[in-house]
Image 1 (cartoon, rainbow, N blue to C red):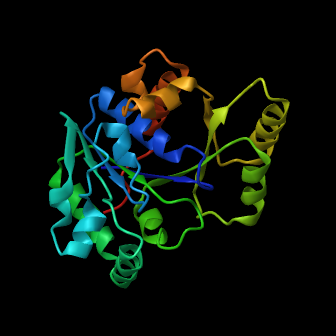
Image 2: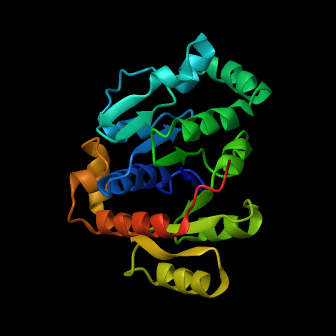
Length: 245
């Protein structure tokens, strides 16, 4: 079972929307998918028609002494979601301290999921690059996609922010109408071997899909973003293998 971790080079680049869209695209290819929200922001579940009032999730369960695996939700046959859960501002430091103390246990949990044979693919929506506590998730993944936008902020971070070896770069919200984006994209293609050979273009369907609380491919099968995520899913099938034991 291959594990793909997706992480924004900073907050706000669209990594969570990409995670939801890729999960849907793999599901549409007939694969069993579990997608896990690893961020305390707890936003991923909003792409899968969950109510704002939902507080349950694996992070919430850890703090409450409950079983993490019982917090998974079935979105549809073959596509399950494990939310992080909602924590208060006061609870978050307590959860973070406890999580750091036993951070390696998630390697065991992922191995248990692999051994179960219940899923074909596992997607992890990580907090933004540079945030503490993500190293274990990165190491457990068979592939790490760092999502970036073609802007000066992302370009600066590529030079200042070290990324784990083997990280692949995924360009999101690309607009060919922007001269700056064209120039940055051309420069990255020439100088960054880690840049994936496809980009997700700026598409209003992405924003509309979140408003509709759906992955973009479910919301609009004919949208450009959905088509490009389908291509990304096929690329993953061809190039990402479950190399971990």
